[in-house]
Length: 179
Image (cartoon, rainbow, N blue to C red; front, side, top):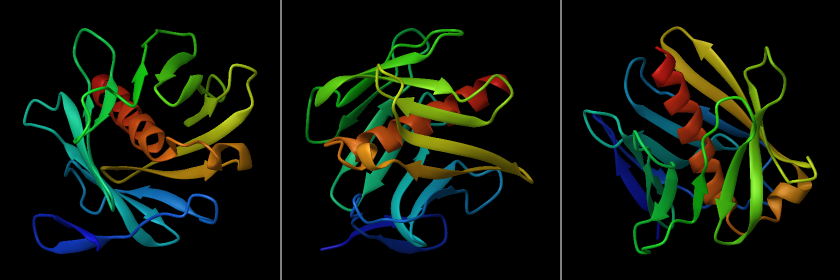
């Protein structure tokens, strides 16, 4: 069975991602100035993320197997929750300059940080600074997109799908708060 998602003009099928074998992951924004992003896994749509409401206080995400809510409260910690569960799969503790700890239900906390002070590259890493997921943002004419790189250790995370969705939601929320 394939999950479907409706955009303003068409319905698309979302494929299941084999995290151990996927070679290229990319977040694309099909239409400029629209709050809809698609995660392409080797060129095939695997997930969608869109603004939760007009006030843009979070995100709704869909994958082949699940629907997710990424809450981004004004006060409090952004977190991702699967629609059929009550507890968040992961929660980010926002900080101004230090790496952002991401607490997970499926394992030890991870750190989310900029690769360097002048970079659009962010890294999800272990407490020992072993990189797991790297997100390289790029800004094209009125669009925010990114390449997602998975390290071998990152491919083994049981909650990788939730983490990829959450960190992209964090990138978009921080980008939105600066504009």
